[in-house]
Amino acid sequence: MEAVARLRNYPTSPRKMRLLADLVRGLNVEDALNILKFSTKHPSVPLEKLLLSAVANWKVKNEGVDLAEANLYVKTIFVDGGRVLKRMRPAPQGRAYRVRKRSNHVTIIVDSKVSAAVAAPSTTETEA
Image (cartoon, rainbow, N blue to C red; front, side):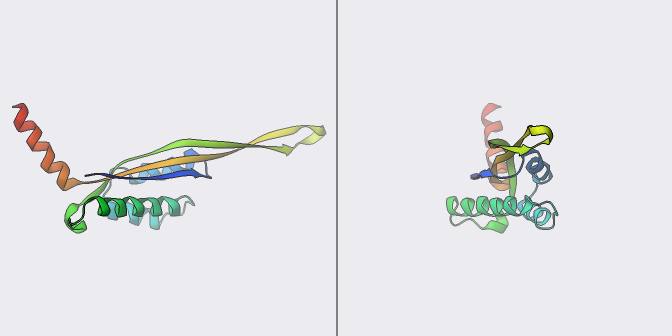
């Protein structure tokens, strides 16, 4: 059974966050955490916390299942644009330049490879 965690209105551009999201998409949770822990990009810290939150949500949903045997992986991760704060910066000759301070929303879905493997053969047997 999958678990979801969401991060809302994180103040960095969606493009910068997507670079990290692409690194961990489809990986085992342990590998993804190691990549995020040792990444030099600044959004890696909240993304690591979000992944740990998704794992904790999975533990709550699946009581009695051992985390090591579950073989968790990052099933889905996507980054959407959030609100944009529009500010003005002074420019030469009395003009002003618009500065867009972007934010984003991140959603992570974590699932167990064991449950996915068990569910897949049962559906193929009923179709055949």
